[in-house]
Length: 213
Image (tube, rainbow, N blue to C red; front, top):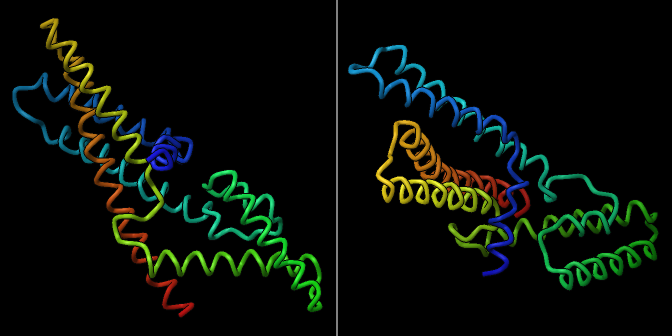
């Protein structure tokens, strides 16, 4: 459970945060203006789609960034740097580093240079881990993207606190209503995006599994 919480609270993994913040600000502003009209003008309908489009663009860029930045995809030539960026406990990192260093020594004895052996050891571990995720991990138990759930929970809690406080004080103004609706809408959206990412991960793992099997 603590390992899950650690991943869920790693909000630093969110890429292009300014874009999702801009989307939320646009949505909130458009909702505020919408509530001031008795009828919805067509341009306001387009504005909603604009804020939604920003959120979709952010979701795509965020996912693509994680594909490029994920340690499973990067070229690595330093065992310590590679192991250090993985989400593991200190003992697991030490055990993996020792294993990889021993493997490098074996490869060097077989005639490889130290650099070639290091690259080979890391690449072999990547393939092993990738195939393990593809074959042995259940669909909804994949390890990545839990930070989306963490952000969704934080967003939902903040929205709930504002709703409870304003309801207790009986001062639910249009501004507070705008904030509540925006927070709850993006909370639901983040949860939905988590499962979209899971589907994309599943497709990606299956394709990689076919390449290496």
